[in-house]
Length: 358
Image 1 (spheres, rainbow, N blue to C red):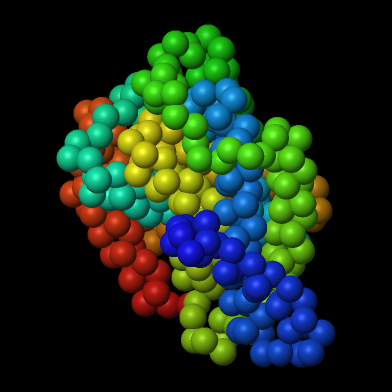
Image 2: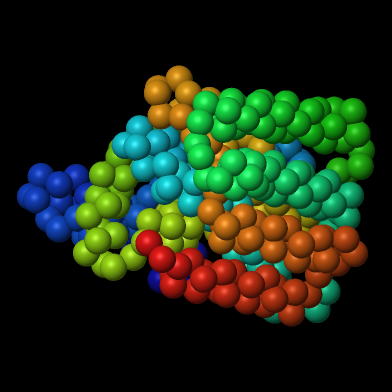
């Protein structure tokens, strides 16, 4: 049997029904939590494969946007489920984890995978720099509420929620305008050599209609498993001795990023670094400037308001990620050592969240 990433994902399909069975049979919460995580992974991979079919029709720029959008559906669904359950700290941690996961883990893994096969790989510096700037804006916008709350001596009032709504609105508008810039007014700046290589993305055999149906079914599956994951997270955290921040930043984020991670690594291994980098950075920017505002707006509507006041460690991790990204994304080329450096920063931050007080 051919050994491939797709075959590995197929093995994980057996975990999809287990959380439902476990809840019915009253399994321990930590088992339901982990089986839900493992069940979401293949669904995220299937969503990534389906979006590649659509991406192959529209080029690397719009294709990366499609992949990031549907890939981030996992994060959005999980976050909204946690928000409805009142787990604000898990929501904020999952936003943080998704941003640093895309910038450090997904991008680092892609650069390392491509660098092992190719000595030096090249990418569109304009597109990467634009995404890095958007992520810098995200770092600023997520820092301001915490600084304001600190200045108010940790007092949380209506002003904090109004500030969060205002910042969310600015983030949302900025993201929409960035799409207009990238896909309409300045799309020539995002032209990639990947678009001319004549190589498909390795997802032949699926029609566009099939891909759309698979996307919808996978999204429903993720939504169902997310409910079981969220309802088990608190008891699982107590049983395993893990704090909510670590679970949200590392475990939940890795599960949610499965689609982007698998696709970015596969594209980098095919020397399609523009698509790989656009997926990783585009997904990170979308989490910060689109998903986070949608969560804030949703919380306001359902009576679970968020103040966007992230912890000091979460803010530091986002700022550090953006800083190291600025060094990687400015020269238009990469090698395996840069991938190792990104992964090393992720490992250090992961340890910080693991040992952080609960």
